[in-house]
Length: 189
Image 1 (cartoon, helix red, strand yellow):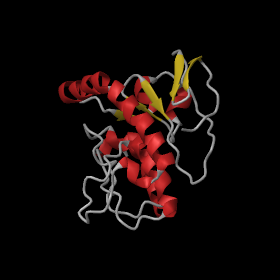
Image 2 (cartoon, helix red, strand yellow):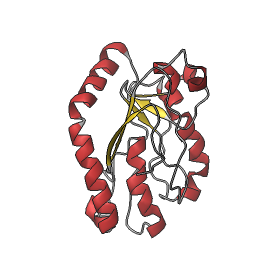
Image 3 (cartoon, helix red, strand yellow):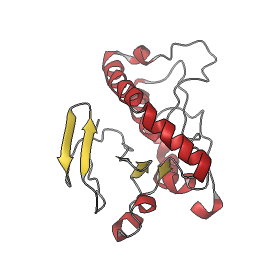
């Protein structure tokens, strides 16, 4: 699919995992799809009044896929990060602070996307073409050249096996701190 430069607009679906069963294909293929687009703007979601409690974890999980938040909430319903309860608020606050720390890096990525067409969200093989296994990994992606992302895609998922491509020293960055090495403990935000 990367050769077609496809992107998907999927903004107004109910934020529940069951609705995303088809979208899982899109998420797995997302880095490949975005190779054809300069900016991964199509991984955005809105959250609306009446959202079920089971959708609240999506508020936390979707930023891993480039969520832009509830910017299209026309109902006037509360859509701020603190509107989803204390637990969601604390998690969002942690990762909003991480995003703030990444501003300079994101600017570098946007500049590279503008000048060279380098995708921000890319499959592992883009940065690790010599690693054969990187060509088969479908549920992880690189955010630029520096960050490997392994998003949560299933309701209740509490751990994940993550492939770390060869030839790089990896550092786990999470709310719990950092760990360095070529292997990281299993953890989900």
